[in-house]
Image 1: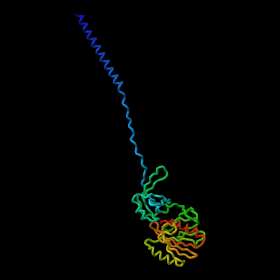
Image 2 (image 1 turned 180 degrees about the horizontal axis):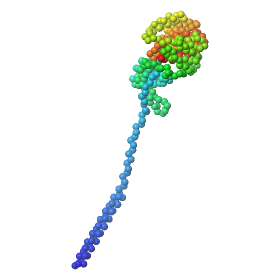
Image 3 (image 1 turned 90 degrees about the horizontal axis):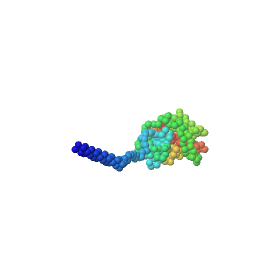
Image 4 (image 1 turned 30 degrees about the vertical axis):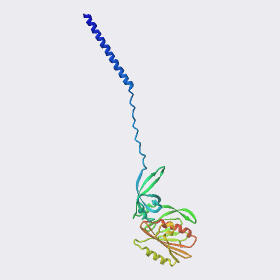
Length: 292
């Protein structure tokens, strides 16, 4: 009886052992299958958001200079520190520009933007412009300046040197000397070729200047009041030009306003060979005048 009990116990123990082994084997197979069937999840790399193309950098700036005029319907030319530059007209600036005259001192605001494909060029656009009562100090004008014009049928470039008068500055050429005390521009080869320069007082009347000019020039010969559009372009815009002519002498009385100041020029030009060089150079000098 005792042996039978022992046999029964071993049978139960052996069965339990076999069952445990089977269970362990099944769990091991399930884990292997799970590991074999599961592949690592793909790593998702975040693509950088497409960056917007950078727009050209636009810088807002301020400037002051001398208004030269319209280059075309949407471009103006302004001389700044003796150098002429072209500016595009921004929205709403047309009416302000229309009120300006050649030679007016102006203050303005503008933007400067890079031009794609050209690292050196800049697009300058006027955003605001107005006539300025401020005059350009002589020390801000360059000591020399180049001028282009026609001389005896040929286009030439001549360099003018800055000269200072009583309340003004202008450029003169090597063919001339400037007498500051007398306010006179004089041609070297013949002193009879000259221009007397004076600054007109505030509140002067143009009609009075014209009447005085006509009276003075009657002593020369035929007197004619010129249309400003027909005046030598080197002087720029003028308010008045009265001319007296004879077969020996031409005299001219000219009024030009620049930056709010008006100047009176009296030109004395005998009929002779030097007149061909005197006229263009003298008118270029008169056209360069600025108030001081």
